[in-house]
Image 1: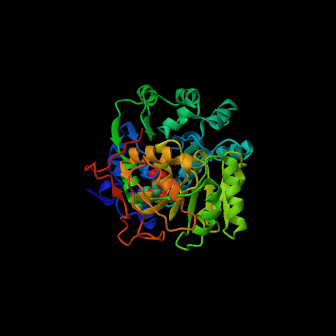
Image 2 (image 1 turned 120 degrees about the horizontal axis):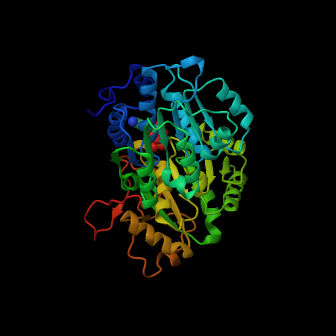
Image 3 (image 1 turned 90 degrees about the vertical axis):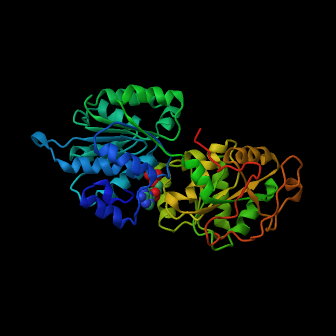
Length: 424
Ligand code: AMP
Protein backbone atom coordinates (compact mmCIF):
# COMPACT_ATOMS: atom_id res chain seq x y z
CA UNK A 1 0.00 0.00 0.00
CA UNK A 2 1.97 2.97 -1.19
CA UNK A 3 -0.61 5.17 -2.85
CA UNK A 4 -3.36 7.34 -1.45
CA UNK A 5 -6.11 4.98 -2.62
CA UNK A 6 -4.87 2.32 -0.22
CA UNK A 7 -5.35 4.68 2.70
CA UNK A 8 -9.15 4.42 2.57
CA UNK A 9 -9.80 8.12 2.75
CA UNK A 10 -13.16 9.45 1.53
CA UNK A 11 -13.28 9.97 -2.26
CA UNK A 12 -14.08 13.64 -1.76
CA UNK A 13 -10.83 14.03 0.18
CA UNK A 14 -8.83 12.00 -2.33
CA UNK A 15 -10.10 14.25 -5.10
CA UNK A 16 -8.68 17.30 -3.32
CA UNK A 17 -5.40 15.53 -2.61
CA UNK A 18 -5.05 14.53 -6.27
CA UNK A 19 -5.83 18.06 -7.39
CA UNK A 20 -2.89 19.21 -5.25
CA UNK A 21 -0.69 16.94 -7.32
CA UNK A 22 0.13 14.51 -4.53
CA UNK A 23 0.58 11.06 -5.96
CA UNK A 24 2.31 9.16 -3.18
CA UNK A 25 1.87 9.61 0.55
CA UNK A 26 5.03 10.65 2.37
CA UNK A 27 6.45 8.19 4.94
CA UNK A 28 4.91 10.04 7.86
CA UNK A 29 1.53 9.98 6.11
CA UNK A 30 1.81 6.27 5.36
CA UNK A 31 2.49 5.58 9.00
CA UNK A 32 0.06 8.02 10.59
CA UNK A 33 -3.08 8.01 8.47
CA UNK A 34 -4.16 4.37 9.03
CA UNK A 35 -3.55 4.61 12.79
CA UNK A 36 -5.47 7.86 13.06
CA UNK A 37 -8.37 6.56 10.97
CA UNK A 38 -8.61 3.67 13.40
CA UNK A 39 -8.93 6.15 16.24
CA UNK A 40 -5.59 5.58 17.97
CA UNK A 41 -3.69 8.30 19.80
CA UNK A 42 -0.45 9.12 18.06
CA UNK A 43 2.98 10.39 18.99
CA UNK A 44 4.84 11.60 15.91
CA UNK A 45 8.42 12.74 15.58
CA UNK A 46 8.49 14.72 12.37
CA UNK A 47 9.55 18.11 11.18
CA UNK A 48 7.93 20.61 8.92
CA UNK A 49 8.58 19.54 5.36
CA UNK A 50 7.76 15.88 5.91
CA UNK A 51 4.07 16.20 5.08
CA UNK A 52 2.99 16.02 8.71
CA UNK A 53 0.19 18.57 8.28
CA UNK A 54 -1.62 16.33 5.83
CA UNK A 55 -0.76 13.35 8.03
CA UNK A 56 -3.12 14.65 10.71
CA UNK A 57 -5.42 16.88 8.63
CA UNK A 58 -6.63 14.19 6.24
CA UNK A 59 -7.76 11.79 9.01
CA UNK A 60 -9.43 14.65 10.89
CA UNK A 61 -11.41 15.62 7.81
CA UNK A 62 -12.26 12.00 7.11
CA UNK A 63 -13.47 11.27 10.59
CA UNK A 64 -15.52 14.45 10.89
CA UNK A 65 -17.23 14.02 7.52
CA UNK A 66 -18.20 10.46 8.44
CA UNK A 67 -20.83 11.72 10.82
CA UNK A 68 -22.26 15.17 11.03
CA UNK A 69 -23.49 16.05 14.47
CA UNK A 70 -24.95 19.41 15.21
CA UNK A 71 -26.81 18.55 18.36
CA UNK A 72 -29.29 21.17 19.45
CA UNK A 73 -28.26 23.41 16.58
CA UNK A 74 -24.90 24.34 18.08
CA UNK A 75 -21.83 23.93 15.95
CA UNK A 76 -18.83 23.95 18.25
CA UNK A 77 -15.39 22.55 17.44
CA UNK A 78 -15.10 18.80 17.08
CA UNK A 79 -11.41 18.99 16.31
CA UNK A 80 -8.87 21.34 17.86
CA UNK A 81 -5.36 21.88 16.50
CA UNK A 82 -2.89 23.87 18.60
CA UNK A 83 0.16 25.39 16.93
CA UNK A 84 2.90 27.53 18.48
CA UNK A 85 3.04 30.32 15.90
CA UNK A 86 0.54 32.30 13.90
CA UNK A 87 2.29 31.39 10.68
CA UNK A 88 2.02 27.70 11.36
CA UNK A 89 -1.61 28.04 12.47
CA UNK A 90 -2.38 29.93 9.25
CA UNK A 91 -0.73 27.28 7.16
CA UNK A 92 -2.60 24.46 8.86
CA UNK A 93 -5.81 26.41 8.16
CA UNK A 94 -4.81 26.67 4.50
CA UNK A 95 -4.19 22.93 4.32
CA UNK A 96 -7.59 22.18 5.85
CA UNK A 97 -9.25 24.49 3.36
CA UNK A 98 -7.47 22.79 0.46
CA UNK A 99 -8.01 19.19 1.51
CA UNK A 100 -11.53 19.83 2.77
CA UNK A 101 -12.77 21.88 -0.17
CA UNK A 102 -15.40 19.31 -1.19
CA UNK A 103 -16.70 18.74 2.33
CA UNK A 104 -19.22 20.87 4.12
CA UNK A 105 -17.00 21.29 7.17
CA UNK A 106 -16.08 24.69 8.54
CA UNK A 107 -12.80 25.64 10.09
CA UNK A 108 -11.45 28.75 11.74
CA UNK A 109 -7.96 29.92 12.65
CA UNK A 110 -7.45 32.08 15.72
CA UNK A 111 -4.18 33.64 16.90
CA UNK A 112 -2.97 36.64 18.81
CA UNK A 113 -1.77 39.97 17.49
CA UNK A 114 -4.92 40.57 15.52
CA UNK A 115 -8.51 41.59 16.30
CA UNK A 116 -10.26 39.19 18.66
CA UNK A 117 -13.67 40.63 17.67
CA UNK A 118 -13.51 39.18 14.18
CA UNK A 119 -12.53 35.82 15.57
CA UNK A 120 -15.44 35.90 18.01
CA UNK A 121 -17.81 36.63 15.15
CA UNK A 122 -16.48 33.73 13.11
CA UNK A 123 -16.70 31.36 16.06
CA UNK A 124 -20.27 32.43 16.76
CA UNK A 125 -21.28 31.29 13.29
CA UNK A 126 -20.11 27.81 14.21
CA UNK A 127 -16.99 25.84 13.30
CA UNK A 128 -16.12 22.17 13.11
CA UNK A 129 -12.34 22.46 13.23
CA UNK A 130 -10.52 25.11 15.21
CA UNK A 131 -6.84 25.88 14.67
CA UNK A 132 -5.38 28.10 17.37
CA UNK A 133 -2.31 29.39 19.10
CA UNK A 134 -2.60 28.66 22.84
CA UNK A 135 -2.61 32.23 24.20
CA UNK A 136 -5.43 33.49 22.04
CA UNK A 137 -7.47 30.37 22.57
CA UNK A 138 -7.20 30.81 26.34
CA UNK A 139 -8.36 34.42 25.99
CA UNK A 140 -11.36 33.24 24.02
CA UNK A 141 -12.08 30.54 26.58
CA UNK A 142 -11.84 33.03 29.43
CA UNK A 143 -14.27 35.31 27.63
CA UNK A 144 -16.56 32.32 27.14
CA UNK A 145 -16.48 32.76 23.42
CA UNK A 146 -15.54 29.21 22.59
CA UNK A 147 -16.61 25.83 23.92
CA UNK A 148 -14.42 22.81 23.78
CA UNK A 149 -16.79 20.31 25.35
CA UNK A 150 -17.45 18.56 22.04
CA UNK A 151 -13.89 18.21 20.85
CA UNK A 152 -13.29 14.66 19.66
CA UNK A 153 -9.81 15.09 18.18
CA UNK A 154 -7.05 17.15 19.77
CA UNK A 155 -3.80 17.82 17.89
CA UNK A 156 -0.72 19.44 19.33
CA UNK A 157 1.68 20.45 16.59
CA UNK A 158 5.34 21.31 17.13
CA UNK A 159 5.17 20.45 20.80
CA UNK A 160 8.88 21.11 21.30
CA UNK A 161 8.44 24.64 20.06
CA UNK A 162 5.44 25.12 22.34
CA UNK A 163 7.68 24.16 25.19
CA UNK A 164 10.44 26.54 24.09
CA UNK A 165 7.93 29.34 23.87
CA UNK A 166 6.57 28.71 27.36
CA UNK A 167 3.13 27.56 26.22
CA UNK A 168 2.94 24.35 28.18
CA UNK A 169 0.88 25.69 31.13
CA UNK A 170 -1.60 27.08 28.60
CA UNK A 171 -1.67 23.79 26.73
CA UNK A 172 -2.43 21.94 29.94
CA UNK A 173 -5.29 24.32 30.79
CA UNK A 174 -6.72 23.89 27.32
CA UNK A 175 -6.42 20.13 27.39
CA UNK A 176 -8.22 20.05 30.74
CA UNK A 177 -11.20 21.75 29.08
CA UNK A 178 -11.51 19.04 26.43
CA UNK A 179 -13.45 15.84 27.13
CA UNK A 180 -11.22 13.00 28.31
CA UNK A 181 -12.75 10.68 25.80
CA UNK A 182 -11.04 11.92 22.68
CA UNK A 183 -8.31 11.13 20.22
CA UNK A 184 -5.06 12.97 20.91
CA UNK A 185 -2.20 13.52 18.48
CA UNK A 186 1.15 15.08 19.31
CA UNK A 187 3.76 16.00 16.75
CA UNK A 188 7.21 17.26 17.61
CA UNK A 189 10.38 17.76 15.58
CA UNK A 190 12.44 16.60 18.53
CA UNK A 191 11.66 14.45 21.54
CA UNK A 192 13.50 15.74 24.60
CA UNK A 193 12.43 14.43 28.02
CA UNK A 194 10.17 17.42 28.62
CA UNK A 195 8.14 16.69 25.48
CA UNK A 196 8.05 13.01 26.32
CA UNK A 197 6.59 13.73 29.74
CA UNK A 198 4.02 16.08 28.22
CA UNK A 199 3.11 13.29 25.81
CA UNK A 200 2.86 10.80 28.67
CA UNK A 201 0.32 13.04 30.37
CA UNK A 202 -1.78 13.68 27.29
CA UNK A 203 -1.71 10.52 25.21
CA UNK A 204 -3.37 7.22 25.84
CA UNK A 205 -1.44 4.20 24.59
CA UNK A 206 -0.25 6.04 21.48
CA UNK A 207 1.06 4.63 18.24
CA UNK A 208 4.62 5.91 17.71
CA UNK A 209 5.67 7.15 14.31
CA UNK A 210 8.97 8.66 13.40
CA UNK A 211 10.75 9.85 10.33
CA UNK A 212 14.31 11.09 10.23
CA UNK A 213 13.81 14.08 8.01
CA UNK A 214 17.02 15.91 8.66
CA UNK A 215 19.19 13.31 7.02
CA UNK A 216 16.99 13.01 3.98
CA UNK A 217 16.65 16.76 3.74
CA UNK A 218 20.36 17.33 4.00
CA UNK A 219 20.88 14.65 1.40
CA UNK A 220 18.49 16.11 -1.12
CA UNK A 221 19.85 19.63 -0.97
CA UNK A 222 22.81 20.61 -3.07
CA UNK A 223 24.97 22.56 -0.66
CA UNK A 224 27.69 25.09 -1.35
CA UNK A 225 29.77 27.29 0.86
CA UNK A 226 31.12 30.61 -0.36
CA UNK A 227 34.02 32.01 1.66
CA UNK A 228 33.70 35.76 1.82
CA UNK A 229 34.77 38.60 4.08
CA UNK A 230 31.98 39.96 6.20
CA UNK A 231 32.00 43.38 4.57
CA UNK A 232 31.63 41.86 1.11
CA UNK A 233 28.60 39.72 1.82
CA UNK A 234 26.07 42.20 0.53
CA UNK A 235 27.97 42.74 -2.69
CA UNK A 236 28.24 38.98 -3.14
CA UNK A 237 24.52 38.59 -2.62
CA UNK A 238 23.75 41.24 -5.23
CA UNK A 239 26.07 39.47 -7.67
CA UNK A 240 24.42 36.11 -7.07
CA UNK A 241 21.00 37.55 -7.70
CA UNK A 242 22.02 38.22 -11.31
CA UNK A 243 21.61 34.48 -11.78
CA UNK A 244 18.03 34.13 -12.98
CA UNK A 245 17.90 30.48 -11.96
CA UNK A 246 17.55 31.83 -8.44
CA UNK A 247 13.82 32.24 -8.85
CA UNK A 248 12.50 32.12 -5.33
CA UNK A 249 15.04 32.48 -2.57
CA UNK A 250 14.78 32.44 1.18
CA UNK A 251 17.68 34.33 2.77
CA UNK A 252 18.56 33.85 6.41
CA UNK A 253 20.15 36.41 8.69
CA UNK A 254 20.90 36.16 12.38
CA UNK A 255 19.20 39.36 13.47
CA UNK A 256 16.02 41.23 12.70
CA UNK A 257 17.90 44.40 11.79
CA UNK A 258 20.16 42.37 9.58
CA UNK A 259 17.10 41.01 7.78
CA UNK A 260 15.78 44.53 7.15
CA UNK A 261 19.15 45.74 5.94
CA UNK A 262 19.59 42.88 3.50
CA UNK A 263 16.05 43.30 2.12
CA UNK A 264 16.63 47.03 1.62
CA UNK A 265 19.95 46.37 -0.06
CA UNK A 266 18.35 43.92 -2.47
CA UNK A 267 15.53 46.33 -3.25
CA UNK A 268 18.14 48.98 -4.02
CA UNK A 269 19.62 46.54 -6.51
CA UNK A 270 16.33 45.96 -8.24
CA UNK A 271 15.54 42.62 -6.60
CA UNK A 272 12.02 42.55 -5.24
CA UNK A 273 12.36 41.48 -1.66
CA UNK A 274 10.88 41.77 1.79
CA UNK A 275 11.86 40.84 5.32
CA UNK A 276 9.92 38.77 7.81
CA UNK A 277 10.68 38.78 11.52
CA UNK A 278 9.13 39.14 14.93
CA UNK A 279 9.22 42.95 14.98
CA UNK A 280 6.87 43.18 12.06
CA UNK A 281 3.15 43.59 12.48
CA UNK A 282 1.09 40.56 11.63
CA UNK A 283 -0.37 42.06 8.47
CA UNK A 284 3.09 43.07 7.24
CA UNK A 285 4.30 39.53 7.80
CA UNK A 286 1.35 38.10 5.94
CA UNK A 287 1.84 40.54 3.09
CA UNK A 288 5.48 39.50 2.76
CA UNK A 289 4.64 35.82 2.90
CA UNK A 290 1.84 36.14 0.35
CA UNK A 291 4.04 38.15 -1.98
CA UNK A 292 6.68 35.47 -1.76
CA UNK A 293 4.15 32.73 -2.32
CA UNK A 294 2.57 34.29 -5.39
CA UNK A 295 5.89 35.26 -6.93
CA UNK A 296 5.67 39.03 -6.52
CA UNK A 297 8.66 38.90 -4.23
CA UNK A 298 11.75 37.05 -5.39
CA UNK A 299 13.71 37.15 -2.15
CA UNK A 300 12.33 36.78 1.36
CA UNK A 301 14.78 37.61 4.12
CA UNK A 302 14.04 35.94 7.43
CA UNK A 303 15.36 35.20 10.88
CA UNK A 304 15.20 31.62 12.15
CA UNK A 305 12.26 32.18 14.46
CA UNK A 306 10.17 33.95 11.83
CA UNK A 307 10.93 31.30 9.25
CA UNK A 308 9.74 28.46 11.41
CA UNK A 309 6.70 26.93 9.87
CA UNK A 310 6.90 28.98 6.69
CA UNK A 311 5.56 26.62 4.12
CA UNK A 312 6.16 27.86 0.61
CA UNK A 313 6.52 25.47 -2.26
CA UNK A 314 8.99 26.04 -5.05
CA UNK A 315 11.76 27.73 -3.07
CA UNK A 316 14.64 27.18 -5.51
CA UNK A 317 17.41 28.42 -3.22
CA UNK A 318 18.18 29.06 0.39
CA UNK A 319 20.97 31.50 1.11
CA UNK A 320 22.57 31.61 4.53
CA UNK A 321 23.72 35.21 4.58
CA UNK A 322 25.01 34.34 8.01
CA UNK A 323 25.60 30.83 9.22
CA UNK A 324 23.62 29.82 12.27
CA UNK A 325 25.59 28.84 15.34
CA UNK A 326 23.68 25.63 15.82
CA UNK A 327 23.72 22.95 13.16
CA UNK A 328 20.07 22.01 13.62
CA UNK A 329 19.04 25.48 12.48
CA UNK A 330 21.15 24.98 9.41
CA UNK A 331 19.34 21.75 8.63
CA UNK A 332 15.98 23.45 9.22
CA UNK A 333 16.93 26.31 6.97
CA UNK A 334 18.15 24.31 4.02
CA UNK A 335 15.10 22.06 4.31
CA UNK A 336 13.01 24.99 3.07
CA UNK A 337 14.23 24.32 -0.42
CA UNK A 338 13.59 20.60 -0.48
CA UNK A 339 9.96 20.31 0.43
CA UNK A 340 8.26 16.97 0.07
CA UNK A 341 10.74 15.25 -2.16
CA UNK A 342 11.86 18.25 -4.20
CA UNK A 343 15.53 19.05 -4.52
CA UNK A 344 17.01 22.46 -3.94
CA UNK A 345 20.18 24.46 -3.55
CA UNK A 346 21.59 26.00 -0.41
CA UNK A 347 24.36 28.59 -0.56
CA UNK A 348 26.10 29.54 2.66
CA UNK A 349 28.24 32.62 3.10
CA UNK A 350 31.03 31.95 5.53
CA UNK A 351 33.26 34.67 6.94
CA UNK A 352 36.24 34.17 9.19
CA UNK A 353 34.25 34.14 12.40
CA UNK A 354 31.87 31.55 11.02
CA UNK A 355 34.47 28.91 10.21
CA UNK A 356 33.76 27.13 13.46
CA UNK A 357 30.03 27.06 12.74
CA UNK A 358 30.71 25.48 9.37
CA UNK A 359 32.82 22.80 11.00
CA UNK A 360 30.04 21.97 13.46
CA UNK A 361 27.50 21.84 10.66
CA UNK A 362 29.61 19.46 8.60
CA UNK A 363 30.04 17.22 11.60
CA UNK A 364 26.29 17.12 12.16
CA UNK A 365 25.27 16.50 8.56
CA UNK A 366 28.20 14.14 8.15
CA UNK A 367 29.17 15.50 4.82
CA UNK A 368 31.50 18.21 3.63
CA UNK A 369 29.92 21.16 1.95
CA UNK A 370 31.26 21.90 -1.53
CA UNK A 371 33.26 25.11 -1.76
CA UNK A 372 32.29 27.36 -4.60
CA UNK A 373 34.88 29.98 -5.36
CA UNK A 374 33.55 31.04 -8.71
CA UNK A 375 32.45 34.50 -7.68
CA UNK A 376 34.07 37.90 -7.38
CA UNK A 377 34.47 37.89 -3.61
CA UNK A 378 36.13 34.58 -2.88
CA UNK A 379 38.28 34.98 0.23
CA UNK A 380 41.16 32.56 -0.29
CA UNK A 381 42.63 33.45 3.09
CA UNK A 382 39.52 32.17 4.85
CA UNK A 383 39.27 29.12 2.60
CA UNK A 384 42.89 28.18 3.19
CA UNK A 385 42.75 28.66 6.88
CA UNK A 386 44.49 25.61 8.28
CA UNK A 387 42.54 23.20 10.34
CA UNK A 388 39.50 23.33 8.18
CA UNK A 389 40.25 20.20 6.24
CA UNK A 390 40.89 19.70 2.57
CA UNK A 391 38.38 20.85 0.06
CA UNK A 392 38.41 21.63 -3.58
CA UNK A 393 36.66 24.29 -5.58
CA UNK A 394 33.41 23.52 -7.28
CA UNK A 395 33.67 22.86 -10.96
CA UNK A 396 30.21 24.06 -11.54
CA UNK A 397 30.37 27.82 -11.40
CA UNK A 398 26.68 28.55 -11.51
CA UNK A 399 24.01 27.71 -9.02
CA UNK A 400 21.64 25.74 -11.17
CA UNK A 401 20.58 22.36 -10.11
CA UNK A 402 22.39 19.48 -11.70
CA UNK A 403 20.06 17.60 -13.98
CA UNK A 404 19.96 14.52 -11.87
CA UNK A 405 19.22 16.65 -8.86
CA UNK A 406 21.86 14.87 -6.88
CA UNK A 407 24.03 17.93 -6.56
CA UNK A 408 27.74 17.85 -6.03
CA UNK A 409 27.64 16.52 -2.61
CA UNK A 410 30.75 15.03 -1.30
CA UNK A 411 30.63 12.82 1.63
CA UNK A 412 33.38 12.69 4.06
CA UNK A 413 35.34 9.74 2.69
CA UNK A 414 36.24 8.68 6.21
CA UNK A 415 32.63 7.88 6.82
CA UNK A 416 31.38 5.27 4.50
CA UNK A 417 27.90 5.03 5.93
CA UNK A 418 24.93 7.01 4.78
CA UNK A 419 24.77 10.31 6.54
CA UNK A 420 22.05 10.07 9.08
CA UNK A 421 21.22 12.98 11.23
CA UNK A 422 18.40 12.82 13.62
CA UNK A 423 16.75 15.88 14.93
CA UNK A 424 18.26 16.68 18.28
P1 AMP B 1 4.42 19.87 5.97
O1 AMP B 1 5.47 18.94 6.47
O2 AMP B 1 3.08 19.50 6.43
O3 AMP B 1 4.79 21.29 6.27
O4 AMP B 1 4.33 19.73 4.36
C1 AMP B 1 5.36 20.10 3.52
C2 AMP B 1 4.93 20.29 2.08
O5 AMP B 1 4.68 19.06 1.45
C3 AMP B 1 3.67 21.10 1.86
O6 AMP B 1 3.96 22.06 0.89
C4 AMP B 1 2.65 20.13 1.33
O7 AMP B 1 1.80 20.75 0.41
C5 AMP B 1 3.52 19.10 0.67
N1 AMP B 1 2.98 17.71 0.70
C6 AMP B 1 2.40 17.10 1.75
N2 AMP B 1 2.11 15.82 1.45
C7 AMP B 1 2.51 15.60 0.18
C8 AMP B 1 2.49 14.46 -0.70
N3 AMP B 1 2.01 13.29 -0.30
N4 AMP B 1 3.01 14.62 -1.92
C9 AMP B 1 3.52 15.80 -2.33
N5 AMP B 1 3.58 16.92 -1.55
C10 AMP B 1 3.07 16.82 -0.30
